[in-house]
Image (cartoon, rainbow, N blue to C red; front, side, top):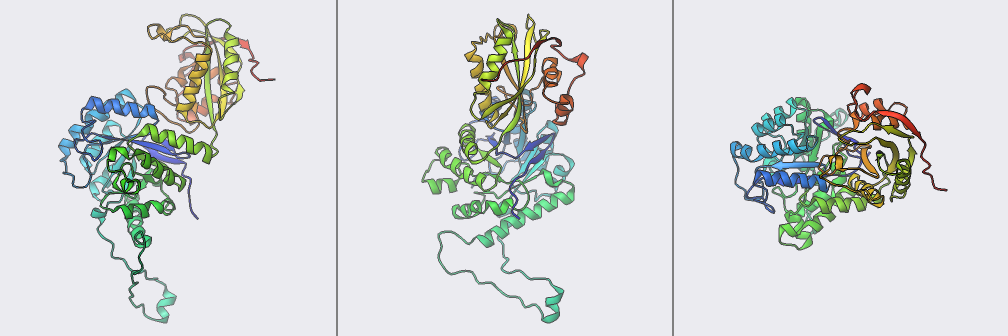
Length: 483
């Protein structure tokens, strides 16, 4: 049976939901990568680019310090470490909950990166080095096994022998050769190519599992462009469903590669992003759930458009609402009505309104409530819609004032089912969710046991006496339903 839906990929302390496609942003900290060499060689520029990709919608940042383009010059581990270590440290200092991947084939670099807090080891040599397999087994990181033709060599398998006692008893097994087709097709035959690719990926996955890596930590990559022709890349990508059927999440890493140029007619690698997006969408349709790309913003936008039509994917989410200016309860009510009009989004329940103590340098008491919604929007798209609600209610944001000053309405997206995100614009779950009494108490109106719910989702919750913004009184129900 063809398996298409992989709900979880375990990557270090993260459990990445794969019920929707995930975007891995490429961060090459190299002078000679094929399309962006030198752009992010400076550590500060690389860190800034990583944070930008997170805000554009990247779920993973893949940091690499050695180019593996055709004709590349190998880099010794010391030089690779000098390139990637400051960048990894900087990313995780700025975005501690970010999922960072190390793209390396050197065990020493992988080991250091794991200590620094990376969540994924992406090995272009497919963990062929036993030392890399040991590093993987000694960590709890996600592992990306990639097929590289020159690592594996050329397959010579031409036949399959059935090892059946019943058949052996009838006649001896005679070796036979299956002749190669002499007919001319536009592309190579799929069977021998996929036997080679899938055989290697399956062998290496079993090697990792024998070493102690759990099945749910393994992801596979057929390695387009790695000593493969454009024709071979297309054959492999057309067989994505077969790769998915192996039982591991599949990553698609075609971005800007020669095969993309071959089918699009675009010579310059940097100009191939539109065609790269098209091929990523095809892979997603066939079951791939991670795409590794250079242009994160365009890819996320395309996936959001495709996914909204192709899949019904409503998620449970919670929005914390606060007001300390004017008719506070009226502001909360108006905000809920506007949220209920956001496309692909509906309000399910709303808590009562509560008077709460001021917190985070806010000077006056606040009226707070929490809305439970169902939404099919990407979290960053939903965030923009919530900011639009604030704008409609004339919220003024003044960075010079503590807490950005008084607010007619504050709409905080604090939780979205199955979503983890890190960045300056949005962090999910909200980093202060577990300490806010003015969120946790209203959530009791919506859930039987919000503390248990959040703890199960990996959100640490403070004891009531240790929280901020304590609830002091009830202000009544919000009349938010339209007539």
